[in-house]
Length: 312
Image 1 (cartoon, rainbow, N blue to C red):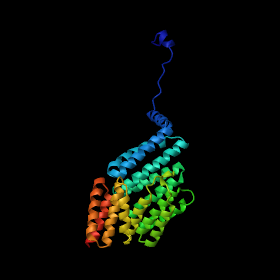
Image 2: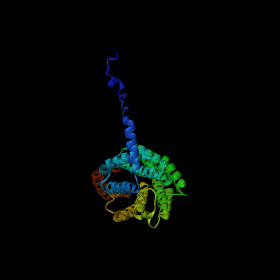
Image 3: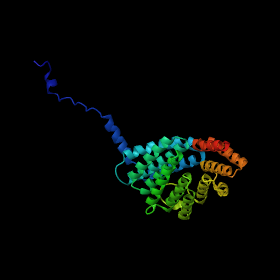
Image 4: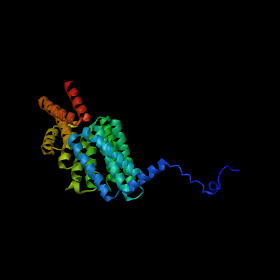
């Protein structure tokens, strides 16, 4: 009557496989990958960041920027699928450092919008880490975007606020860096006396051995602080800029190529203010050659602006 044999009728019902949710599978895989992040993996990621920094300072963003963006995406994916706890906080602080470096590189490549966005992402990651000095540092470094687009008054305000915020809890090295950054903003805003006071405070805050402190990475010692002060002096056409910058150039480690380019641009500016046209052109020529070799659009624009000003 049913058109089937008795064996077919009494057989167990066929098992229908549930459809596979590919999104669920992928989520589980990503969660599992993040659970594998231990102290050794975190150390390896930090070592990779240190290697990228070394390439960046010597060969420039034109070589290192793509690599840091790839690493930023990797760490971001791990953080997004990391459960609350110490590992998540460590990944967040690392991501903040990566975005901060990417922001500085983008600024050097002349990409101000991208730079600003990297700093915004760096601040969000820093807040996720719960380690306030990281957020203070990336907020302060973002102020250099403001300086580059001519919003110097806003940059001064931002850096003054970060210095006040950092007084209680931040490492001495970061406080010295913030004072120097404030000094540069003040010089850019043509506030010479306030700028020099900020640089004096930076020298006073600088620890004896800056690199023993924990906290966000900043490259600052007596040599870097001297070239930074020289930059401020050159911006305000102070005659002392030439001696300060020349001394810093002699002591600067040769791997700091981008720093050397910026220093030579400052020195060319200082010579121009002193009406030494030949010396100014010589330094500008050296700076231009090195700036092109590392792809520093930011410094090339500074050189072009200085030359245009000198020709008028």
